[in-house]
Image (cartoon, rainbow, N blue to C red):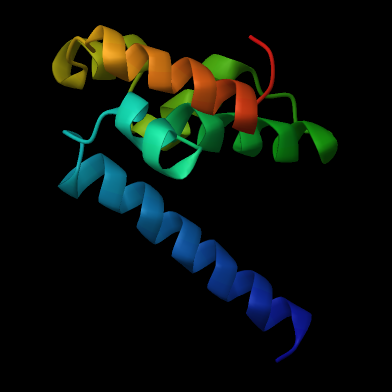
Length: 103
């Protein structure tokens, strides 16, 4: 497979993941994603922002989050985020430290 085709396939898979999280599973909580998979929508948006910045594209955190969430982050939170209990918060702190680093 040539590099251009590989990049196209990777981009298509990424778009499908973002679409799935936006349209089919907005109920899946970021804390649960981080606790189970070691990443969440915020990680995806940070990776997107970092890739843009590495290529000389000026993109801030809010703009990158809007790409991943399909709306402003605070709007998504108000519509979809639910409170997390102490157990989930403790697991998140551990997962965040292991996968992202110190807060």
